[in-house]
Structures are given as C-alpha cells and as structure tokens.
Length: 127
Image 1 (cartoon, rainbow, N blue to C red):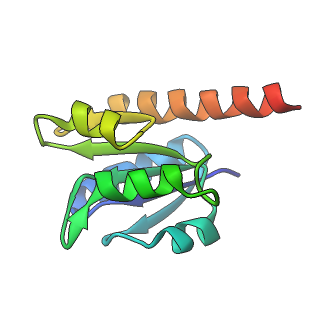
Image 2: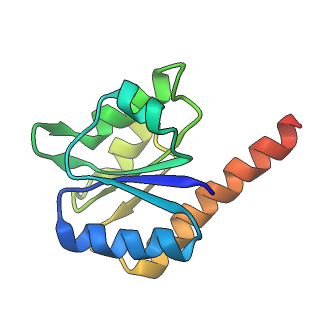
C-alpha cells in the first residue's frame, strides 16, 4: 500500500485530504508541522502533499529540499496554497504538482492520482 504524507496546518483541510487518500486506497500519514527531510525519508511516502504557508517555514522550501536530497528526490511532491503565485512557487520548488485553495475533493483526487500514475509508469519503465 502506498503512503501519502500530508503536511497541513488546518484540521478541516487535513480531514478532507485524509478521506481523499483513503479513497485512493493509500495509507494516510499526517503532520501539522514541517518535517525534516531525514524524517520524511524514514517515512518513505510515495507522495507528499504540503501546504506552502506553514508556521515556522514554507512548504516550497521543504519541497525543494525533498527534491534535491538523494534520499528523497524520487518522492512526488504536491504543493497546496491559497497564495496566488503558487504555480511559480511550485516550479521554483521543483514540485510535481500544485493546487490552489480552496479546492474540491475531486481536484485533489485527480492531482494525486495523476502523480501516482506517473510514479507507477516510472517504476514500470525501470523494470
């Protein structure tokens, strides 16, 4: 079963994301604070969904750390935020996708599914 780590400070958004993750038959891992890259490496999620604006830091910065660290560079990362320039932040942070808040559950389901499919295709190409 694939693991999806959600790093989100808002309980309501966390609840919606947990339902979406479970609907995708994946294991939900949640955190309301930014984690260190070594902690994420230990959890070994297939996908990390990160709120860009977090207390004590930015999800975009963590995304870039994840994508440039050899231990975690293959983990897919999706940024979420109400920040109007989140598309630019996602590009600059090397994110695999982004969603602007508020979003509907269908949008996050489609985005995570798309990222998971690209991950499956990568695994099949390596075999």
